[in-house]
Image (cartoon, rainbow, N blue to C red; front, side, top):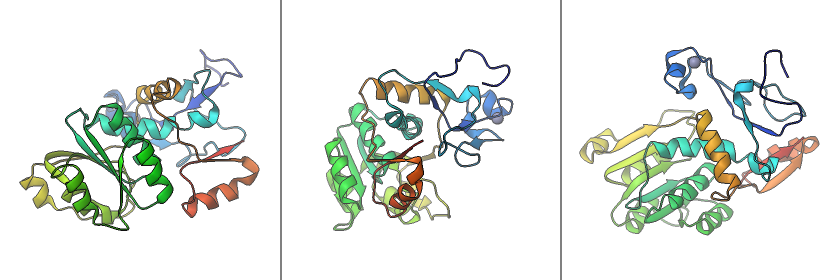
Length: 266
Ligand SMILES: [Zn+2]
């Protein structure tokens, strides 16, 4: 423990949020650390958890609930991101929700939309194991390999989804999320896009769509994610675990999309 840190004791079980913010810029002052001018994402911009030991600011620690294992607690990070994202679209019982992408982000979006009571949740993807899991979690699965996903979503939602969650980061999906949206729909983009994607702004205007992006999470949302996992309200999704010595195999499995979520245990 570093000098000046208190409130923690060595040996305590903790989870570590990845958002390291300066605490002084206008975004931080407004309670939006994920928009910090000097944002550092642990594990991306700085060394993360693929190690026996890592250094993290005390402000990023969360007490781990007693009956949550370390592997289960890894779900808090993606779940917190989805909590942050869905807060922007406020799903209610009247909503028909379409989730594009059935990686862990999409699968947590399915769970949270179900939990919010959405009248219909449709999950669009192209992987058998993940589509089966989406179905188990309460979604109607649409396999885009065999059908036009836009037509399928419009059909299953009765004319268009009132909430669309983008969880792929694939530019080709952008036209589909707009085309799948009902009039007045809210669209939240959670995928990490590495290249620009064209958006039909004419459709956004004509159908009065609301299109928002969301990144990471706040400390409170991470805490909420841990509480949902600890209480069993949200199912942690971990398909494989590897010891640190076999991290190359773990990364290889992720690269060839052979897993839902891989955890490396030091
Ligand atoms: Zn800041």
